[in-house]
Length: 312
Image (cartoon, rainbow, N blue to C red; front, side, top):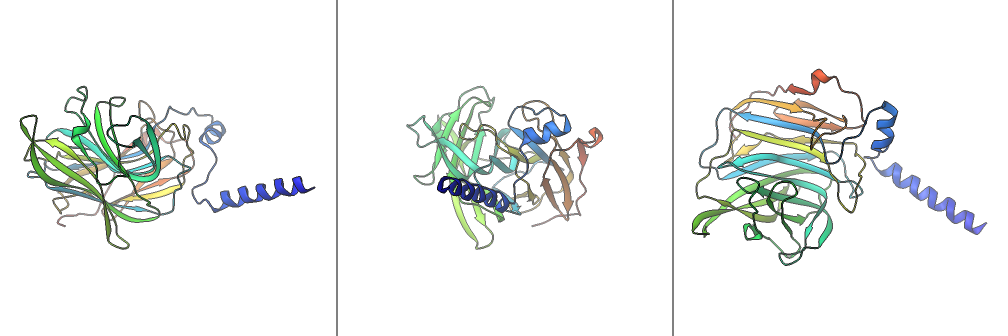
């Protein structure tokens, strides 16, 4: 009888934990089987947003993107909220954002992968994505930062740092710093930070080195929400969550838009089961993630209408 009581108690605790998880929904496999659809291989880009600017931004100094997350997402999920999913400066591609499970090498001497839970990430590729880019392109902000330089998604270098984000409002940013000589040529450090808008605290995540001294920001910028795979959690569930991306600010101002669109890939390296939709409110894009459904193929890509914007 005592053994039975323990089993019942632990079952009640598990049920209570599930009920307390506002992100919880059936597993992707269960939802896909119910609809008769196949699951692509991870990672899954649930939704991509593309801002198209009328022209590149010269003399680039800073990028800021506001992000709002409507509920806590635990590290039982692998969720990547990327306010900069893809952008270029002087043609050099980079990306970054906030993850529920950052992972990487504990320092520049280690090659053992460790997992540190919630955090932020900043990565860049080499110019041709084929030439390796070393850890001399990475500067850590503190001893708890993780690093990586590898080629499994094109040759890249990256810095990551634990950061206990939860439901709330944040600004992910990169800022131009000092220019140094690197391999006989000028190169410039760009530093990534995340600010919690509730208390105005800002944490530095680390810096990456970009070849050049003056920079032009490209005329396209993306954001995405992704479910990814790690050795810690090879097959993550899809958390139910709403994420709001503000319009990118370049050098403190919102660039003039040519247009903005949403795209939901279902094939290729980032193909995803259909479980997200994007809508707009004023000049922000809202990604709503929920159960898997069958999407009208005519809506796989669509334009988004924002209210006219300009200035800071």
